[in-house]
Image (cartoon, rainbow, N blue to C red):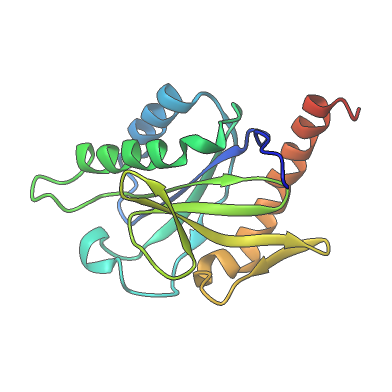
Length: 180
């Protein structure tokens, strides 16, 4: 029999796609007001893997990733996704098209799980219409993409960024668990 235990809190990851970054300071302020200070922000990453978002967001689409200092309870991922959906609507253009696409997720030592409103065979229902997507696993000293992992998350730029984030998270885990 397994004995249920509460998992360690995770680092909150926020993937952001946009072509018009003029509202980035306001977006960043809203995210920090909600989730606390930023721990790490990525460099700009090219997003030439698909043109799926071009019609709504514009072109060229770039990705930016942010991670917050305050760890979050893993059970909050659905709630966080619902809030970011509302923020996308708040920041949308007058015609309702989004300026930003926000992908919140949780980073632990073992994995990166992103939140989505879209069901698929490998996604686990979290509640409130939100699913958890096991995007990457960390095994044998590196990030392992899955057959369904989006190309930008499988790319070396993102994985290098996530490795830096994981190192910071490991320090938190060592403090929490008393391994220091």
